Length: 549
Image (cartoon, rainbow, N blue to C red):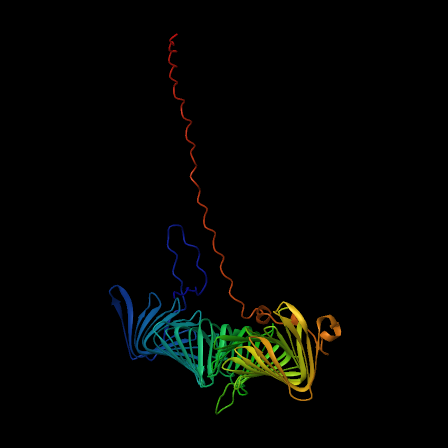
């Protein structure tokens, strides 16, 4: 924390080679009249004036008072003892038990119960250095700052008496009327009352906790502008993003860039690009880049995406789970259920999902459509689906034929994520193919009734019960026509079926797996060819043996 020394007065001529430059000279410190006792002399080769009682000095617009002092006339410096007080420009006052002052460099140091005051704040510490040239005061032994609205403590601190800006380091704690702020690095403007954070910061208040690693907080307006991993935490929710603005007076916040909103009561997370939060209303709105909701229930996870997602908290005193509203281009994905519509309401208290505006749902090989729908869940699994107005269920069999049921209203009952029963209420019609061993069509069953009930087993139709005014017929394969194979209003919309990747978009993308470095190829040792074997010397053939005649 060494400070550069500024030269006062005219610049001296350059020294001759081989000589040391002359030290800078400042305005001479002037002893003001009225001192009680003055003793001068040479002490250990140093000329010193001892002044005792009612001591006062002046250098320009700076005044120094104390009970006693040593003045070093040769080097324009002094030591002050007891009730030391420095006043600069009638605005800055520093007091302490003991002090030193160099008139040439204009450096002051006070120790022991040091207090620094200006019209806007009071600083207390045990040791304070003050550079009057740079208007900079600093401490390293811990300090306590107080103004009419706030208090601030830190281990290290710097104060620019001209700009009125404090810089604090290490164990910084700012206490306002409504909040306690803990950080490691902070700048505080005593005029604007704005605190600037330059490290991990946590603001705790009655309304919740704010966290960020960079940003500003206005202690007057109570408006925060945070960046880098910014978060708002309340008893029920956690809202975060790359950037965050929060107005405590209005209890309103806006997060942008990789926004994430988490409900603590249940395993629910919403991610998007922009998030707005109204604390008094208990309402949050997330939009931008098709936000996605993730709700983990038991062993399954429900994903929901739309152009806009709105979350409304449960109201006191029960504080039950709230409601999710989704609108425009809604997509649903779960392992056992996929769907789409233009408007959706998810009541998390009773686990009921309402779909409207051209809803379509897919369950395994079945497609369900209606004017509006309702999904009822129990223990995280589908229990019932209710289809209202122009209800239609179509499904493919093993031969890719389309079995179809339609009516005014339908109720589909599920067990272990598979359809077990369907009640068709009003204007019921059905069209089902009869198969021989799942390999050939033996005919087509068509029926019309006021109401009917269909029962399934192992994902296959077992029985159809006609309850009112039935009219059924069986058409053999050779008599089937294209008109017989479709009920009015049939549409197969498999191409619109959401996939997991399409629903999640970028917000819950799996992290990219690091590429494995290829193992270094081991160089094979050169194979040495064996030297050709030397030919063995041939033995001479034995001489011919003479045969007997």
